[in-house]
Length: 242
Image 1 (tube, helix red, strand yellow):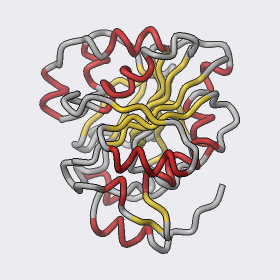
Image 2 (cartoon, helix red, strand yellow):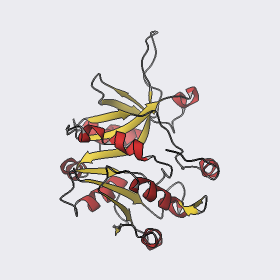
Image 3 (cartoon, helix red, strand yellow):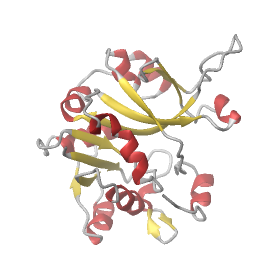
């Protein structure tokens, strides 16, 4: 099976401009993401989608694959779909965020495990058990609940579910990486935005609101995403291991 991994990387990140180029332990963040994704043997090709020649130069300097995309594209998914449109031989496309410098190859394999097993869900995503009780009320930690088949029922920045009864219900912390059937991805990015998506500012809700399913693949691994100055400081001493 041919699997494409696209890393959308903008120079003008809203929360932390030029974040992709910030050095982490001597390497730009985008280089960390690219090199760790490239170590996943299940992936056929890794490409960085960017609007920045500076980011492109970093990837070219390590003989990596890069495609320039229109800076006017509204979302990372649109950048991923633009790249995917050039690779009709790919069956599955991964959207790997550029703020995951310590992503593990094993996590990417877990993300695409339904496809590797012969299934063909519209899209998949990753989540891990919510370990930190403080994250339950933290809007920066996106929660997801699933049906009995492991498909997402809802993603929210609010604490879900509400525990009215003493029931042993799993709570999952969503990890923002996705895989799609290529044909679904090209359709998904043409769908109009939806009310819940705009309310929660969670793009994946668009798929659910339009009636599509997102398979949630569970991992016990968690890494350090780099979205804030505090997380960036932690990244300088983060010990990476598979």
